[in-house]
Every structure is written in C-alpha cells, then in structure tokens.
Length: 279
Image 1: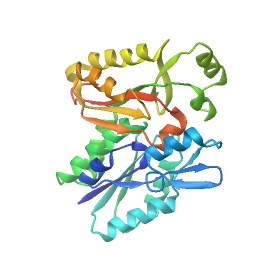
Image 2: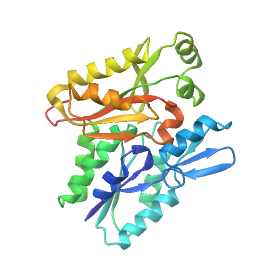
Image 3: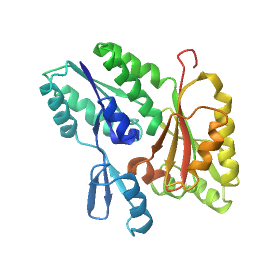
C-alpha cells in the first residue's frame, strides 16, 4: 500500500488524519528558549493561550531532512510499497526542501514529494485526496496525480482580526500593516502562487465574515468539500450557522501554531475543494 506523509501545518483534525492513516511530521514552535513540536508538545488551544500571555514572540521552524527520513524508513519497515509526501508551500517554508532531500536519501522504497503551494486546510484537502487514492489501492503515480489534481482545485480565504502578526513575521510590508491597524481594516487573505496575497478588506469583522459567506455562496454546487478555519475565534459557531445557510460545512479545522504564528488570534475563514469539473 502507498502511504501518505504530510506536515503539521496542514491543520487536518487529528481524527481525520488517524482515519485515513496519514502520517504527520511536526514543525516546531519556539517561545524564547523553549521549543515545542507542533501538536505533540503544544496543542492549538495551548498555543493560543501562550500567544496571549507570553512576552516572547513565537518563531516557527521546518522539520529536518532527518525527521522525514526517519518517518519514511519507519513506513518502509511497516511494509509500505511507496510514499507520497505533501508539504507546506515551498515559498513559505523549508519543509518541502527537507522532504525532497529525505526522499533522495531513501533507497528502500520509492518516495515522491509534492509542493502543495498552499497552507492549512487548502493543503489538507490535497492530503486527504491522496490518502483516499491510497486507500483505494492506487499506485504511487496515481496517488500523486490525485494530490496534484486537488492542488489545482483547493483554496481558502480568511479574515484576519489584525495585520500585526503577518507584519511581524515579514509576510507583508510594514506600510500595509500600519494602514490596516490605523483604519481598523479587517483584511481578507488567501495564498496565490504559493505566497500570501490580499483578496479584499472590510471595515468591521461583521462585514468581513459576511463577505466570506457571500464568497462561499458564489461557489455553489462546484464545491466538493468545505472546512471552517478557526484560530481562537469566539464567534466560530455563529459563523458556522451563517455559512451553513449557503453551503454544506464538512469540517471545522483548528488553525495550529504554524499558521497561527503569522495569522494571529481571531482568524476565521473557509477552505474548500472544488469538483473535478471546476477550475
């Protein structure tokens, strides 16, 4: 059987990854001199609590090639016929490159690596589609093809409560961050060509979430799967109720430390995968 490996920034709920036998290699988060393995030493809830109370700004780091190599070797020992690894956008992290190096160093079974070109559940849906293909008994090339097809049809849009954390992490310019804070703008973001991009803005959170619902409604029957993305958002249930009036909600995914370090608390959004007939 082909096994699917990914990294913890995909934000897949633990029960989903367990059901589909998806192997998760964690990234790391550092607060001051203390380092944590994502979702092993630090859960999303613990991360958000620490973010609010710590005087240290968190930093994230990619897994090493050795981390991936050990996971590949373990799966080979368990009898895997091949491995597909799908990673966080290579333009946002060194995770993909670490997996490529590990694949080149693995001689016991074939290993392919896919650059998701995305983050969070927009990349998690790619992982899910690959895992479903593996469960069907598809070969490595077919599992890879399933991931690549999903990559072309998966995306997300999220409303940030603040631009502060994106600016701190160097993901956007300081001028944009300053104006966003000054005018109380709630930015809407996505990932385009593997990097964070703005897709709109609203004056208030209420208007930002209404825009998300409107965008979801425009997707209509083209959508195969939808997940709500939440990062310590107190209004997630109210948003779910609004969203459910226009589109079926399949999952609620808690944004973890890797994405949360750059989004900040209060982020709320939707990730989706379109049907094969949609582009």
